[in-house]
Length: 169
Ligand code: ADP
Ligand code: MG
Image 1 (cartoon, helix red, strand yellow):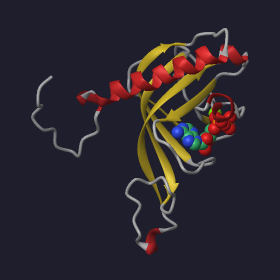
Image 2 (tube, protein in one colour):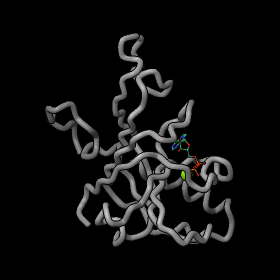
Image 3 (tube, protein in one colour):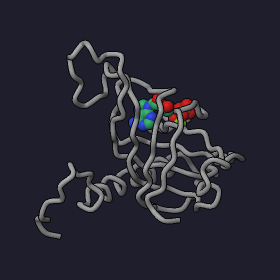
Image 4 (tube, protein in one colour):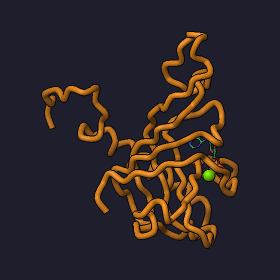
């Protein structure tokens, strides 16, 4: 399927394994195959892109948290780099397809229920099975690194409207 791919939904509870067992929390989105036409056919695996997360103005993880008291109840989307898995997580033998997003930011607070919009920009690797949880964790950490580097490439960097002359390739 052509990039970018998009999906959105509200963050739901998964199986509670992400942070508890692996040390890598993943925000799960509901996968309603009828509503997201591409998700049923896409290769199971790891993808990278951006997540726009709607957080309350007073959420501790908003980068430019303003002290303006008049806006403490308004909600805004904030954009974070992300790496995500789409698939069946063979290590855990899930029978349902899942979409789960690890945001490349250390959050001080959970955000269950928050509206989240995803922009998938590229593919990292296919889904694999693992003999042990250590190998799985190792690969996820490597996936995060691949995603970070891919998003750091100039072509993926969000711009403030004007595209400047590049400073080299
Ligand atoms: P679950 O199985 O319910 O998805 P996880 O252990 O995977 O539980 O934790 C996911 C939750 O952790 C997310 O829904 C979100 O509220 C929170 N969270 C905290 N930091 C992050 C992060 N960097 N990326 C994704 N989710 C995070
Ligand atoms: Mg999860």
